Length: 363
Image 1 (cartoon, one colour):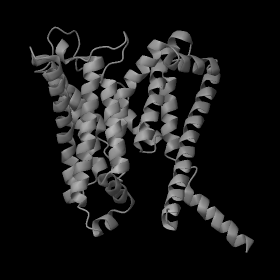
Image 2 (cartoon, rainbow, N blue to C red; image 1 turned 180 degrees about the vertical axis):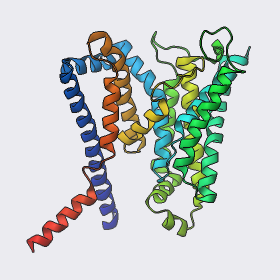
Image 3 (cartoon, rainbow, N blue to C red; image 1 turned 90 degrees about the vertical axis):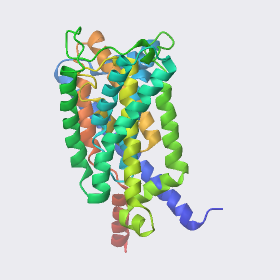
Image 4 (spheres, rainbow, N blue to C red; image 1 turned 60 degrees about the horizontal axis):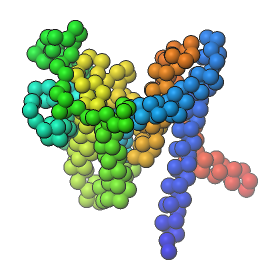
């Protein structure tokens, strides 16, 4: 039997989840309504456009496999942001960590030869995770020991990383046989094999495995409970004896490892060489931020949001073939999702305040 306090906590968590879900659904619905208005303004059929986008990305075999394939790095970057957000920390450097992981994979994947495929892939994945962790260690230490704002540091490091990797790609690591700026193509032994004659690779299952690990850690381990306490009140967590500095560093290291893994997997399953457009526009790391917001920073929510957003990205490439609507409409919808997600329309606290005011007035 649960005590009264435990029952109240469960009701509070349940109510908080419902309000969070309501905010997410409102943001998605509002963004799609604005998309309808824009398509009507340019003389397009919005309902046919949405139908083509969903059907081509989810209800055809090739489209579904492509959606799952694109979802893999999004799951990881979404989780990378969610694990820090849970503790009220902001790792805005996921994009840079992902790029660094992808670049290092491109170098190791192309220069190491005659390795067995399993060993070559394992070396690439582990090195990419290590690179992401080293990147994340800088803002982690500055935050833990010197109280430096981690958001500013990680944002600035993103731009520094992009410039450094651009310099290296144009210089010493450039493939002289390529007609554009890129590294050499990785060896076949470093590539994930295609499954079911589709775009899907085993990288997708690695991403699912990482989701399962993070889900278990968040929900059933002491570390997960400590992260929740840290996010709710850092001063109280420290007063209870928690080593807050250590937890901050651990969180950033986990986030960096996930980001680096996303870059490595995307390199070995999709790009096969590092180019200046490796991450796309706005970038897989920035997409991870939207996915974490849509998923309310919970692992399960991130998984669902990654599949949803992946279907939009895949559908965007299809609607230009089947309709007269430009694919950039998805970027507009994405921007409005972020805008609406930043505004809390439905709130448990506001609901309780309104209820209290009504009770006072009724008296």
